[in-house]
Length: 375
Image (cartoon, rainbow, N blue to C red; front, side):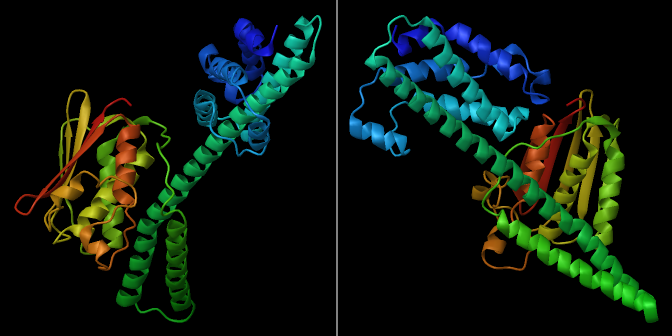
């Protein structure tokens, strides 16, 4: 039996063996069900069989061996890429993911050889074509895995760098106020100057970090939901924003039950960015209004400020990463790299909520967030 026919005939048994091997890849496989363990194995096998049945010239074979051949099997490439992405998502490392292909290749060849009675020259060509197909799928899986890894790393670095600026500003401003309102001498003055200089150097490094990942961002945020009271997190966020901006004096209004099951750290990120956005683009740092309202199954949060409205054409892209406002694009002084509202949207999405924005010259700008009580 030719190898492509053998694969189609025995696909289920081969995938069963794939699943048994995938189970041994711990700890990532410890909590995976059969469907997840068998992910894309059958599609990869059947696509490989189709590729083997496709005519191929000697020159095409040489080009394919160098990774330069035309894309003859899009279904194989798609299955391989999807497999690489999902294995990254569930926690396989690159060595573990590639080991699945090594095992698949060995399993198919072993079973096929055991089934042979009178192998001939054509069977050797079948083996070459099968190895080419598996190598193609492996290359696509590895490329997709590496891309997801890079995206995850870049989004982590970007958010880390972006959110470090708020506490750094609080340190810098607090040190400045201390030096203005208190007479410092000797070692105390030296310490204050060192803190101020250190904060300035850290801010420069954070800006360098953000520039590094400016155009390379990824997707969803991991969260760790726990019972909490959103009102406490809002008060803490207001206090931190006020420490970094002495003129900041937001008005907080709370109605109803504001407790739920959320990630307090992520919601602090959300609040710092929404409050920071209101302070940066609002006309008066004292005219920032924050409202919390508890409903039966959700809690509503809104942040409102007055100032230049967001252009209507920008509303649709305001939550996209690395999107700046019009005044920033024109070179106006700003610390924004277009990550704040992207982070806000990611946090809301990770909690299964929704966010809306409205803006006009008369009514001001209003960001409205709805969070289900249980994520």
